[in-house]
Image (cartoon, rainbow, N blue to C red; front, top):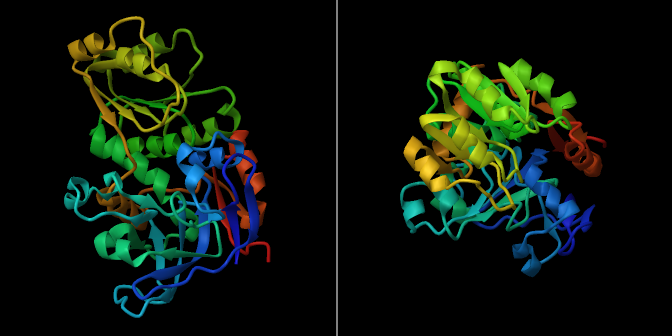
Length: 363
């Protein structure tokens, strides 16, 4: 089958090539991939720096952790799924089943968790295997699609579920709250949509001038009330002015590699506000004043965000089925899998919001 595979450790080792079809074990299912999303976390696989964990992997390894498709083959002991079922995966490939996280259903935090497309062959291919062990221990890691959901939209469930969890479950935004969202990539855009869904009053997006031309119009369409630039020397003061007497209830960091966001967020937030760390940073955070003192006196809640949970997935799929959310503005480009490099470049150059790859689209 055709797949986008990482051939060796280090940058520039991604190749669109032929790899063996996955073998379906007695408890496994194999999906025929209909769509796969490009994620910002995929970029280091091409451009570097590669994560240290990839040094000892067995190559080639098919990438892609955002994917949806049809059940193509089922193992002889599988009873919950049948050929032709339309499904989406939350990319869980293995969990231990007995740690505190697994015992409470928080499978994404399992210390032994392995991800499809990160630790084992993924969905940027014609077919992908879902291991039987995860179907047994975490059966809801695979979910049926609503009849009205396209595969292209199903393939971007990952970022919108991240947004749902950050806004609803972690920040606990309620109607009338003012919210600040750093970043206008897919995570940030979906966070805007979820904030509007719960009738947040001010939805303030902090973005860069580089990404503004392609993505700021989407921010506005999805419900952003104000858009400010990250390099504005008066950023904190402008945000606080927009928040007015009510202040800023939550700051959601959907940007990456921006070490100054936390100290800015603490200054922006009203007493008792929440900072949700969705985006990752590889830089150290520095303060001119004691951050613990500032956060402590204001009673700021800092939440280390990790992905989503089954509540996020179930509720987002339900909202989609009922026509309450629309992924179309965010999925700006659909390309054949063979044009993956074009998709990576468009995302890196901020010419696209979300790029979805479709195996066989050019055949």
